[in-house]
Image (cartoon, rainbow, N blue to C red):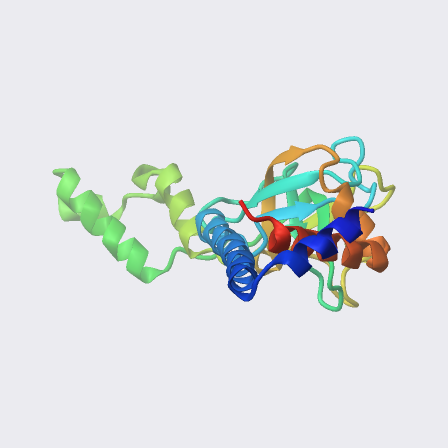
Length: 225
C-alpha cells in the first residue's frame, strides 16, 4: 500500500518537480560525502566510523556497536588501547586490543650528540675538559629518551581480542608476527551500542540492503517539502 502511494506521487509530479527532487537527492549524497571527508581530515583516520562485526571484543564491545576512531600520527600506541587495523589479504578491518609493544630504540646519532654538547656548553660555565667528560646522565635522561623516541621508527605491536583465547598472530599474514603503525586504521575513542546492527543486516542480507536503499531514494524523490 505504501509503495503504491509513492508511485501515485511520482505520476503526479511534472518534469520540473522531478528534476528538482533528483537534484535534491544528489545534494544530500554530496553533503554526506563532504561530511565523511571532513571527518577523515579531523580524525586522521581513513575510516572515522566503523561497526563491530563480531563478538571477539566482548564484553568491551558487542556486535553492532558503532565505534568512533582517530589516528593522529603524534599519538603513541599504548598497551591496552583498542585499535582497528587491516591485514594484507583481508578486506574487513579488525577491532582488537593491543597486547604487547615491541620497540627498538636507535642510537641518538652524532648530530644529536654535537647539538647536545653545544647546548650544555651554553648553559654550564665549566672548562672545556670538564664539559667533554659530561656523561649522558648529566645531559638528562629524559631528553635522551625523547631523542631516542624521535628517531625511532620501529614500533611494532601485537593484538588480541578480549573474548579470544590466543593472540592474533594466527590472523596475520604468513610470517608476520607484529603489526606496524601503517596497518592501523584508527584507535577507538568512543562508541554507541548496537546502532550499527542495520549495517550488519545489510551486509548479511544483500536483498535487504537494496530494498532499504531503494525506499530511501524513492522517499527523497517524492518528498516535496
